[in-house]
Image 1: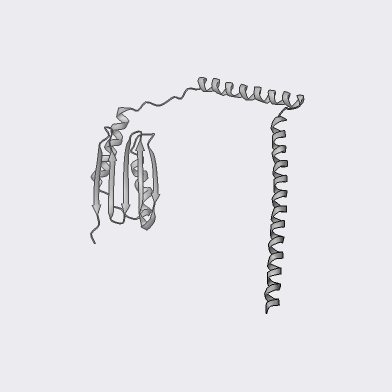
Image 2: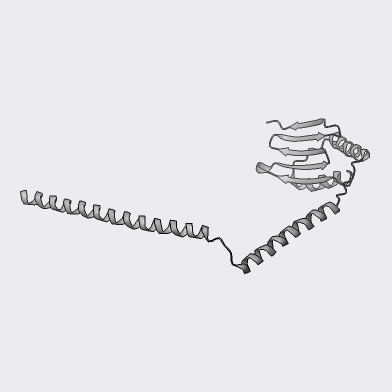
Length: 181
């Protein structure tokens, strides 16, 4: 038994010495590589000098970039955006169509009717009116019309049909047709 314990002690000592030697060797190699890498990076930073041919190419590219930005600035100064003035008559027309929409009290819940409703009222609105439809989860969908700062929305949700209109003065008007459960 004593021989067995002595053998285990010798093996453990040899293992510890081997680990210590290997660790020392690994650290020495790492330090050597670290110094070599640091020296390489330092030399690259000092050697940022470009050959004459490369310098000429770089200068030509820089001049071209500068010329391009100047050209773009000149074109931007020449091009003027013509913005159509908002006519009060068109704003009134949008509000009148929205009032007509509210007066008709449409309560269509089938998304198949969305395009028909959208076209019917879009044709009555001012020429630059934007419109879009969207469908959401749970069978909900909406139609949205907008003309500058004015908007009209028809929303069909799980709980009913809702209208919202922002008129030319920024006042919001709403109507709700809630479903009963």
